[in-house]
Length: 407
Image (tube, rainbow, N blue to C red; front, top):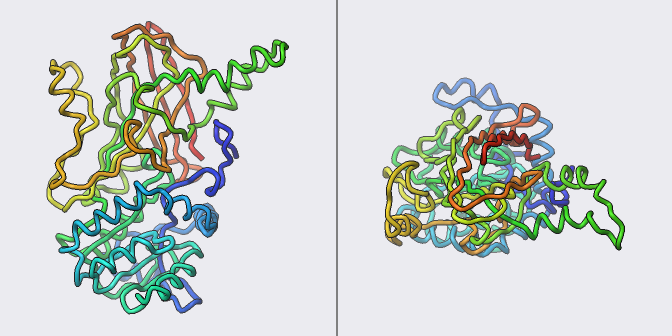
């Protein structure tokens, strides 16, 4: 399987996000997972989902060191997590922490450095074997217990005060790891416990990207003096059929973004993640071709108190908001209100980049021209870790539908 932009779809080359769901396993001195029967006897436990062949392939893919190297080298990601853990050191010190999808164990170790009494570091990939060795090499075996297996299957004999996880995938929900955080929250988190990150927001905006279209499509109009325009339909299909993971700048964005989905990790349910729909009505700020739509997300590291995060939002549709108010809505929340990890085009780049859904043919927009429609993100029935994208949009009296699958 290839991405629309030609990148291979293996986790190492595609930069797939959201690490394998963790838990207990056998061998290497790891804990054994509870049986399904034991889980069923605990009435307060959430339902344990089956482990499919797709899951097993997913876990195996995350044994590749290149995936973890890329995440660790993302300084924006890793240093933001470290800063957030230290920000909440007073809630972590002498407490029990659960790291879901621990990978190499770096977040678990950060929590140990913050004074955690015990950290359960859970991962269903064989990378947990190396994580256990990393823990030993740093003399933290008395604090950090590495568990190999799914978080849905592990045996932990105590409630936890904190859950930390780097669960976000491309377009936030790709790879469907958030349900594992919900499972862990409902099964082990103490009332009033801390979840890091606490909130997430997914955004969408129309974009123009002439260079990208020129490189992938216009190339075929003149190939060493030969007209290969007959290749254009195939070129558009191969380049733009699937979502593309790329880095764009704020200059590519044509309007204020809209909020597609806001997630409160303290209250979100698995059911509401199965399908997400958002309507949009954009007004182009520029006269430029519309080449597609970009998606990005922010996550906030905050406490369990009620919290609303919308610093990237455009004003409500139909409202009259002056330029100063609009400018204020773009500003970061104050430093004492939470730490933000953003993948927005105007912020420092991360390995998540942005997710682009390109149109087969651009639409020439005039300034202030409307772009209206809706987008639906839903779990694939083929594989819940895949993401179906259904886009309906209209502009200039023409309407279109685009279907795409993120595999």
